[in-house]
Structure formats: structure tokens, C-alpha cells
Length: 226
Picture 1 (cartoon, rainbow, N blue to C red):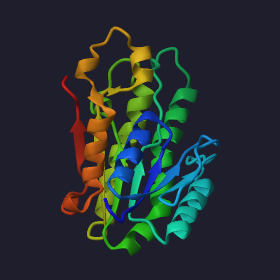
Picture 2 (tube, one colour):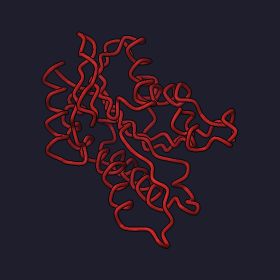
Picture 3 (tube, rainbow, N blue to C red):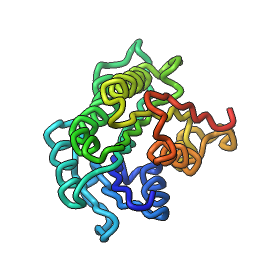
């Protein structure tokens, strides 16, 4: 990761923080973009850009442009921004479907579209998206989330085909991630079977690395020990 300029969206979340810390420790320069307005102070190796709604194409474009201008380019985009909602179709509302579409699919779409010119200029650009194993076969209550993440899967494949030879585009498909929030929401689950943020970050950073130059259009399951 030494010398790589990496944009991380959703950087203040549990997975985003882990990826940022791991990449910084390996010599990368990071642009952390998040919806949260109040982020820690920037450093020479870490630019913090807060208060950004990536579901808005204009705001996504402005944030990516600021990142490229500040560091002179972008090598990697990690689309980690996203959210989860559990709601049955019967008795539910369109609000959850629209929210999941905006926060999971549009954020990745807008950030990717804005970053493509900069990643192409890098000569070996990388995009890594966050899909979901639960989007491969949705269970009860998973409709809104699974539909949005299935969209991320198809976006990944389409972009990989469009950008082949210029930018690799892949996605990781985690099962339940072991976070404090998930432990609170599912206190009776067997946490030992969940994938950890560190394990998932390792796969993400591999796909972002030079070692993954021949991998594109892949949807990589990261299922923990289920």
C-alpha cells in the first residue's frame, strides 16, 4: 500500500475505520469521506472530508475532486459507505427500499463515476465495493437491503467490463460483520462465527493492491465461519 492514494467512503463506520487504520499502517495516503460532519483533524497522510451525502451526485463529485486535487490524484476507491434495514415486504413501506437504494447503491455509483477519470489516469486504478452474501438469496425481512446490495453486485460486474484493462472493479460479500452494533442487535448470536472487520479489511486491501492486478469483476464471499 506504500505510496497509494486511497479514497475510503463511510470512513467513520466500524469497517471504514478499520480499513483506514490498516491502510495507513501500510504506508498508504488516505482520503476519508463520510456523511458525519465532525471528523477528526486531518494529517499530512490523512485528509478528512465530512458532511458529504454521496447519494447526491454533485456532492460525491465535489468530494472526489477535492481528494484528487489535494493529493494530486487517486489510485484506489473503496466504497464502504452503506447501511442496513430489516423490514418485511408485507406491511412495510417504500421508504426503506428507497433508503437502502440511496445509501448502498447510489453512494457506490456516484463515487465510482466521479472517481473513474482519476483512477484511469493512475494507470492501474482499483475500485472495491461492499456487497453482501445475504443478497445472493434474500431471507424474510431482507428485501430492501438485499435488493440494494444485489444492485451493487451488478454495478461491480458492469463497471469491471466497462473499465477492463484500465481499472479493476471487485466486490467483497461479507456475512454478518462482528461489530459492537451487530452484537447489540443480535445478542443471542454466536459471535465466533462472524467475520471480523480485520479479516474483511485484509481482503479489501488485497483487492486494492498491485497483487490483485489480474482480478476484476469478482464477487468475493467473506463468510466468516458459518
